[in-house]
Length: 487
Image (cartoon, rainbow, N blue to C red; front, side, top):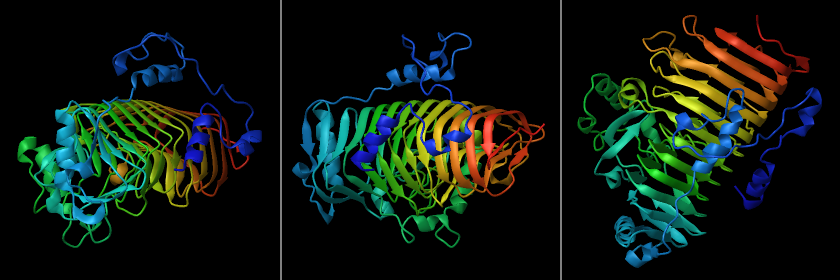
């Protein structure tokens, strides 16, 4: 995203986009809610002192005050000082390792990547280490799976295992960052990594089935060893059980699967990042999973799957870990291609609560949905206290708003998810097949969806609303007519 665009989005905070649609609205609520003083240390207590009747948005300033990027000592360790050569062909894995180790041994600082193209395998960060890419710097990751061994403790689609290392990885670290204006290039394409998602060998499907069975049977994570000889794709960036995380300014592209994946982290800032990965299978932009206190702001996403997807573990393994995602803020982001703009799920087993998204622009002929919640009766968990406002949707290829409890066409199962308390205000959509695709379950309806002061201009198909309790449409217009909730 260019700097002018970022400045525009920052200035737009607290205002509504898409004024051209405003004449169809009878009125609008205040765009900003004043914060309150004080602080809290956990998601459960974040709004305890707000009092009955207070706007849920009054939580946002409290959450935001707790999210503070890490700071690092003013020491610099250029990777070129440890043998790295930015010619695009010299393998620099050892140079990156030595630079990180030297930085950590000194008490922390910045591992500097100067302009140039650096070919490398896995980069593992340490406490108090900032990986900084100067303008003109590209880290180009090797296409050889052997360069991501030995296996590490990781997650694959919500299930823990030992697998190929993510390309940039940190485990149980404090104060870690990836910053700068350079690019992290995963180099995945139809013949490297992405081909594992298909049907002809090599394919990930047998390994996905095996991993799911291991989790259901309670096999210890240390014994769920994949990696060499297997085909479960690693993430580009995964920070696991870390505290105080910053990813800022960089461009990431062409990951084997999910691009940015914080797991079980606390205090995460992802700011002014561009994810440019529209052609890869499962190339989600940013997937905070089982994380608390996350800020995603002024980012641009162009992805082959969901742009932002908030997750919390899957099925038996999600119940074993039992860790929710809470207090996630998505502010002033742009979403282009993708299966969903801001998505929750489908891995919802640990629960997702207190998600706020505002001042986001979403539009593409290949953006399937703008707001999406997906889960099924195998997942369980909960999704509640979800708040969106001031969302501008130029066009979408399917429903503007989707809440579906039958993900992967599963209508029955032993673990019905609890989904409800979803509030959407001042959403303006230009063109899409339908405004709503809301699919609950006769034995487990969606409970509580409120849409207020919103306009859907050019919808070409009938809405789908099934097994939803307490759907409220207040001052909502579809194709120029006031919409009413089904009785």
